[in-house]
Image 1 (cartoon, one colour):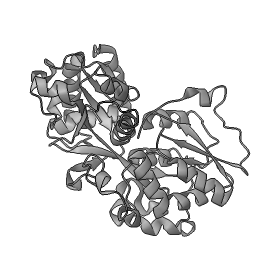
Image 2: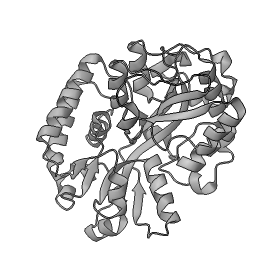
Image 3: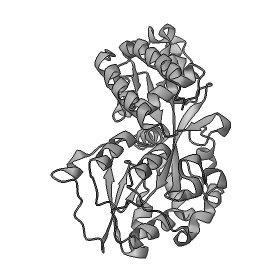
Length: 356
């Protein structure tokens, strides 16, 4: 999930102080809730929606582990749901209080990270792929339909200092594993070490690890290729259209397959009054709310009724609605041992990777 960290919202305390009778506090990625939905929920249920943002799931997990509380809802991706549950940070859900769950495509329910949807219900998904500068890559003769573009020196020598990847070990390792022809969720240490070595060889050619400002750098031509989220690119393209800028950003899925972050609505264990949380979850699952979400933010929805009304223009964007879901992979939770290794290795990569 994406991606704008606003630390000022968390200054001085790990606890949000709010009148639970008037406000609903959500911990969510930026640009991931349609303004019309927040307004509609306030008008219908009387709660002001207060959004607090995190940039990566690993950041959110670290804060929750450190005792962050006061949120009525969190929007974590698949593997983060599993980890939050193992940390005893979630309330079990009463699905009888969420009748609009009937609108969610069944292929996104009862998945391995939360069998029976005991703790979570799907909200939306956000695809990971490569966005690029169309003019510059045409000059260089590079077609970014493969993860090799960010890992293979034959491409990177041409792109030196013009590539960004996420500041996210799960995303970068998954992409490297796909490039190597491996399972992007592999926990085999031989695969992970091979992926680490691939990343270490590629990192000196990259500009930076960037989950936040890469769209701005793509738009102004500072970088030519960026690991990207669909929601980020959609918003950037819409902003460029509105300001009548020349649009020179291209999008392409990779032939080895792509990851998607399947994000969910969960209720933290620390919440005492769950009434507002259930009301929001049910409201967010309305076809109207789901349609607002995909139309306004470019998020990919799994609401069967809402999908009937999505504009043909958005539906045709395969980086929002992939044509072949068999080549799309969601993240699975790693064991604590693998998570520790991955986090330590990521620090090593960042210290020694020599990004510009």
